[in-house]
Image 1 (cartoon, rainbow, N blue to C red):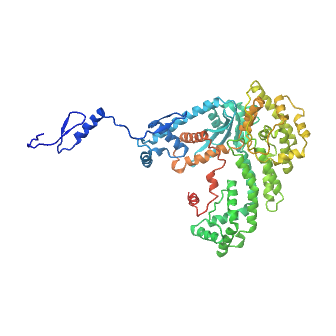
Image 2 (cartoon, rainbow, N blue to C red):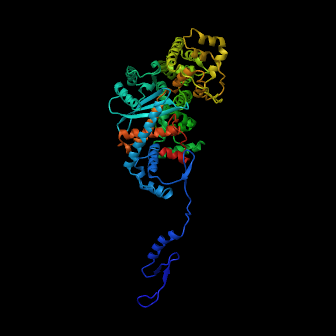
Image 3 (cartoon, rainbow, N blue to C red):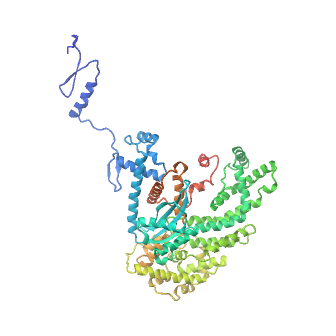
Length: 635
């Protein structure tokens, strides 16, 4: 090519078309642009990148592609599940993390968008839950409690318990509503009723388990006036068993508070300054113990006192030696010193409270029947009270606890009685033996109650017979032998203490109508009492063809929780949601976050935390040579 100055310059010729291009000082951009247009027309360039795949719930596999709407939904679900702030998706560092490590196409999600996504998800899941509740063949049991938030806003939580189609207990928070007014019976009734009307289940409620506040008790009368109770109202109002245990133990703690107070003062004083604690750590090392921290208890939670004492008993001599030495150096009177008697009372009291602690844990369960466990725990607690009644150091505490125990359980709740009657290993004869054992330990006469319980049993059965008498079910496979419940030593004694004839005579005496119920009470089942964790719900599902009416009654009984802990667990969650930095959340948004989190945990069967694990960790394994433990203390 001849250039304007007369010189011949090079030309660029395309390999795929006849076009020629000059090469000038202006660059090669025109060559690149031609290549981008020409090459796709003549050459097929294979994609060398690996295709990403995704698996669908039905097992099919397709090529993965970024879906902005689905990503927002997953983000909203994650925020609700893990108590993250609503503006989490708008965080620059979160965006950088996702786009750099996972998906460069991810789009920033604003706080407003996330809020709308959460509300949409809440409404969709609530509609699904409403449809599920409408198709239930069993009744619904409720628990409810009130919580005071740090935002000076009170909330009432209503939780529903029911059996799904697979005969598994389900627990779902139905409402987390603000209480903008006094906690009177009328207001409590109105809020709970509004929740029931939201799901259209007013006519399906079998029971409501509440704490012992007088307003709660009065609100039950308002529900009864509305004809809400099912099954004749025999089970409609249940007092929280764990609250009763708390009242029983608190009455005993008052009697030994002076000795516990000295231990509490000692561990509080040791941890009140870093130099003092470091000196105590060196003192532990000299005595062959690992240096560790100790957490003081909270007077309103008796189990915190139990955990405090339990975790410092191993260090009793070391704590006393260091604390008393420092008191002497500062000139304090010897009366303030820790004594061996203080630690002896603490040791015996921990052993004594172990039964009450275990009862609280057992009766706080979610995925197994607690109504069938209540009398077992009452029997063991009564045995412990009887054992320590004459103890020189704990006698006064035990007498106070026994008085409170009798106030609530000298008349056995009908639900607890039926919970063991529908157990094929116990039935009516076993109930009589358990009540007789408890009565002997605490000087309570349950003999008249046995007759009353039997009459009520047949009355309730007749109600269910009218409702389900025409229903027939197909036989189910026999259940596999599985480990079955503890606390059977007393019942096994029955076979030695009473003959079979005397046991059967109780069952057959003057029985009212109810052939199916009589047949169950008189039957002998091949159930191995030596195994543990017997699945009572599975047993009734298997034998529903043989006892079609009684199986409905039994499953309704077994789904009723005897404590409100399932509702109270929502408060520990809401405490993380309505923290001081987020107390501007509206009550409606609080309910959205609380419910989505609970429903997501229910979907994965992750609601079985009977006690706050973080709360327990605050008292245990606080060794200073473990990074994780020390971090927990700092947090």
